[in-house]
Image (cartoon, helix red, strand yellow):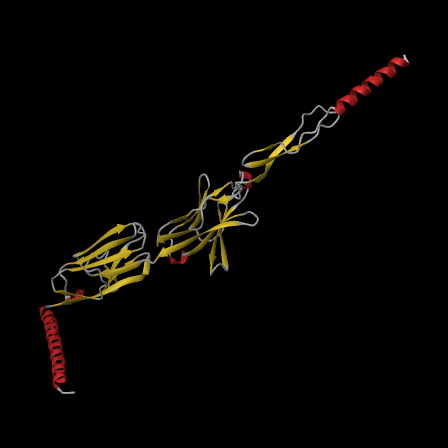
Length: 330
């Protein structure tokens, strides 16, 4: 009985020793390719387990300087694009783009920098607005554009805007917004600004006002004409008044016509926008009768004759000075 037990234990011990001595170790470097050195880490199989051998392969060095995607600096939240400059017309609604890939759990914010970056105003966080100015909103455009919308922009909105990602440290890009200065002017047929205009009694006043660099909206941007302090757009007493305004994408052309004018129609005529009353254009209109026109024409003709006479006298004097200078011996 004891002999059988001893024999069995001796057999099991011999079998285990042979199995352990047959285990070999894989070489540390397994393969080398033309472009990349691949390193193989081998983990020995421990005794008492039937699990297979585990090999982990990763890039150790790349002789061509190429990087795999998980070494790329764009792995994680990053901007699709760079800082930009945008020019807009006063009165327009502007969209500032901020495209972000792989945002994950990070937050997007918009801020405005003023005074060379010294003052920072928080505008939005996520899709929530954190400013009292209702013109600022975030309009997310699927799949990755966190657009900042600014409605009815004006010159005070000009400056630098910053889109931020809440990484550590934060990532950001800038959008520099420029607003074209709007202009309103009454011009002549040559396109030059008018200061004075003369008309004869019973003729028709025709004045052209041009608006430029201004986004026109039918319900807001009304071109108004004034005679002195009296608005002509809605004047039904005088009669013979016609105002035609053609709205364009970046401005307007407005024509004022007044028929059968009288001396009482003289005075200042002003063109302005209802949305920009602080930037008017004014011309002084003179309505003259026949006697006044004759005096004007006569005075103009006399001035022209006098100017021609003065010019001829100067040329004659210059010619005589040259002749006498040439004749006098030196």
